[in-house]
Image 1: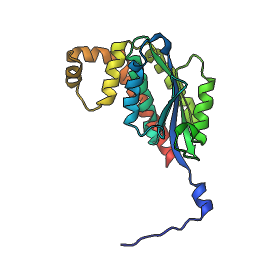
Image 2: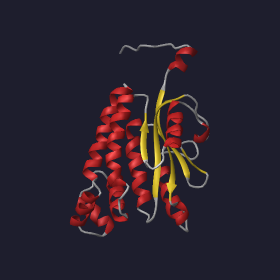
Image 3: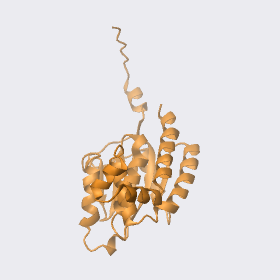
Image 4: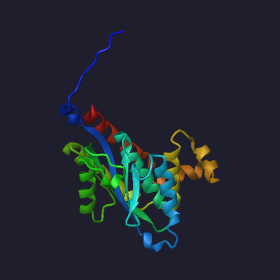
Length: 221
């Protein structure tokens, strides 16, 4: 077996870019919910599956958060799951800015880390007004295509009912489960699962997420 050994100097090491995805967000309507644990506990449980606090995720200013998704291809999927989890609670929504780019400094707390992805996410979040989900990457062609798709998808996602959001998040959590299996988890029929998925525009949203991966994947290689 032949082994090729490559020796890098310090300049080469710092030139290597670590690409990552950063989601900056806040809960819309959080003050209308008397018990914040309704959404806080749910999100903390999900964020815990992505990594450790505060290195990978952290809440700040009460209802704001930042999450790192090191598997860049999954960052939109994670954002969709967050959207569905939050909208499963009556009266709530979430606003999120996804930044994709390099990571130049890793701190023990995500809010102290830095790099292109953090800058993209933070600046985009500050610019967002009525829009609840947007993406900024180093590639203009990707930004244009995916944000047009998101603008159309949000016409449906922003109007998800609690029951629709509940089914969306369950489908994302168990992507290989059948409608019958999902129905058993919610104690409803397969037909009602199908109806809720259709009303949520789930098939089209999953196709958008798959298209996002196809756009990003060649850029990472």
